[in-house]
Image 1 (cartoon, rainbow, N blue to C red):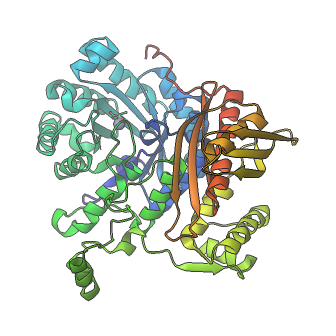
Image 2 (image 1 turned 90 degrees about the vertical axis):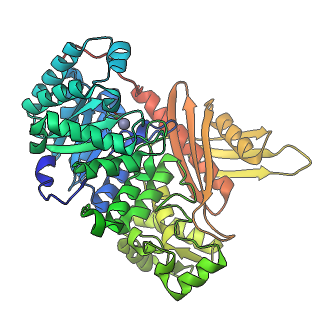
Length: 525
Ligand code: KIV
Ligand code: ZN
């Protein structure tokens, strides 16, 4: 089934998730193949219609991640992004072709600002490139999406000409991006209305919208888009994406669900998976969700004022327009304690959708026991963090054996670590300086002989309470290669050391593979 066939139900809005493409373009985010695959599997569980898995021409790593997703993730359409050149489109096709439902998304700007200053070409050339790109993609597959980039700052008549050309060549979806987040909802709706007048054929294909949040209007503009007739919204989990990000997936989905009776439109998503998807993306990207973030923020369903608490206790709907359980919050039941056995762990994980056997189950059980010894109760959220942290396919590289830190307010902290290196040998390193975590990181650098630059460091707690698991995300740069890593532990220094070593291993693996992210020059289409 192609993306356009999925849109047959007139009241159904399809969700095109771009967390792994536009979202991954956020500064500091650097997901490896395994992490992208994990997010894609969860997006499939959430029930998104399309996963834009990446921009395959940009790096061998991105190509391989899109290919792995196309080969293994079942359910959603798997889409790869391409500029208009044959080189880009061939890379996108080769990456997505193993999917049961492949799609190529190609784009070129229609605004004069972009045509003159960025592309340094002419409107005629843009028309030619759009035609050639869609025609080339159609040689490979049916499902082709075309976007006139920066459309909301472009001449609507010219954009309509380009859209007509793309439809003429067989584009199945036309996506209108508000690339720089400049539009206002009434303008965006009017722009789409005018496009429908100028291009009657637009009614034969799926109209999609892709809004950025530079003025905080991405979700409002996406709503204006669907009210004007669009039946696909491009969005990202937690609203991540270029600059201020994309429309937040969870917000547009819950907006349509909560106001379904008034708007008359809905998506097909399993909304109970929203909170878990948000946590996974936050954990793997290191982008924390602000506490008051709509739908998935920690406080989105918390009531602080006495009047509100009183009202909710008497009748939930006095101050709640949604039930927290419909987005998968409050599913943090206590599941296990220190006397729970392997069988109970396996069953609890299975109920959460993680199927573990053999060595993976042994590793999980060992970590679970360590944590249960230090923490009275292990909740579903603890298990989720543990599984995301521990059971990911390990990148061959460095592993922490042990560490010691002496910290005092009277002397600089001193750290000593032992690390197993990629060849199986062990090495020790020491460092004295700054804070205890910095001392551990520098001691790891001394043990591994790698001089890394720390570019991101975030620290958080998995649940509430003094014995909560701590989680740390770091991004490092080693000789021009970035690597991200996460660590979870009851001890925050242990979590930080694990995260740092993983990030070093990823950066080292990237440098071995020569995986530099960047766009090659566009060849003539
Ligand atoms: O914002 C944008 O215009 C894009 C396009 C590639 C659709 O991300
Ligand atoms: Zn975008």
